[in-house]
Image (cartoon, rainbow, N blue to C red; front, top):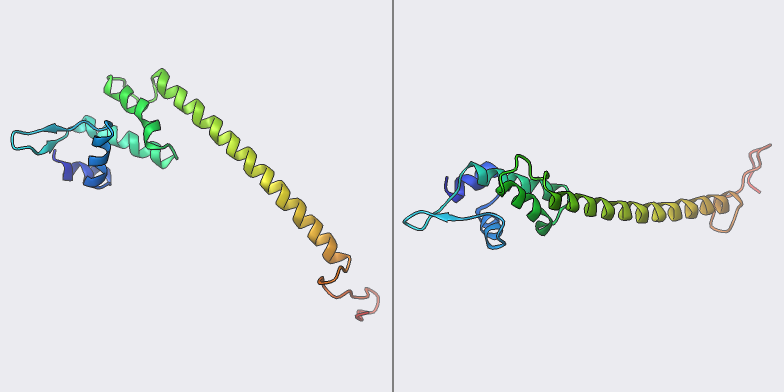
Length: 137
């Protein structure tokens, strides 16, 4: 298939495919008249790249998965290098989750402090109300 058909089938653009080619991720074979030509295995490589990018992997992180498929493995994540990328990515995600959890805890503490201040009648808080008579002091 030609580049336009591959791009359409993969839901991307020909420009993206040329970029992947320039990065060495997508092989380009040429016909006698110079047109790029691709087959189903190229579509499979492209789908692997796109899926990983959808999950937050950068383009270079997809390389071991592509190489695994090119080596003839049934799945792009069945090679040791691909598994190493998964492990590294999980470590990054765990770190980000830890950072976000710390920020969330800080915001929760600030909210609790602000709510206590508002209830205690700190200037700028709501007007105190007498619970017995409903009158404002």
